Length: 67
Image (tube, rainbow, N blue to C red; front, side, top):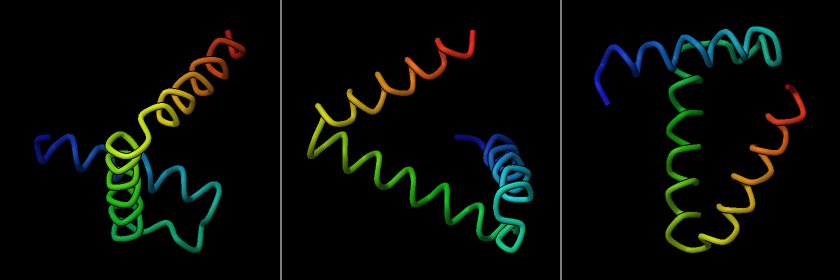
């Protein structure tokens, strides 16, 4: 992933945090949150791919409800 995309991702998470957890709305916290999510999704894919598929299906169903 290129550096510009990483900065955009961090900015998006900071904006999310400003709404939901303003006390944690810093670039450092956002970067740590993204690292945590990436690591845990990777571990899930390696160790429990069925659970990852269930997570994907839940997300997909939620998105379909929005439309």
